[in-house]
Image (cartoon, rainbow, N blue to C red; front, side, top):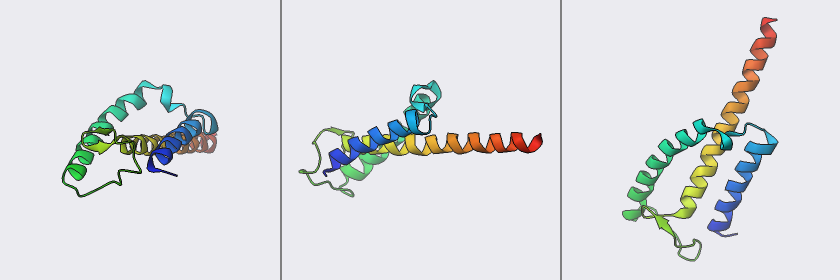
Length: 106
């Protein structure tokens, strides 16, 4: 499987977990997209710095060749999947903890 295929698969998997498996539905919330806009700006800055200085080098045959801020678009896909995955679990576990605390108060 190529880097591109893995990146696309990770986005689809993270989205499916968010929308249907755990049902946090962050993808349809303004808060998520606002948070992601802040995060992606720093990701672009970091990716640009690492790739433009050849600290991180990609095999041309493993990526599409489309770059944003000097980094392959696949990095943005992986970053999106990671952010969505972490925030999905954060919200899920936070809700569970709140439910446990509410039960304990009764």
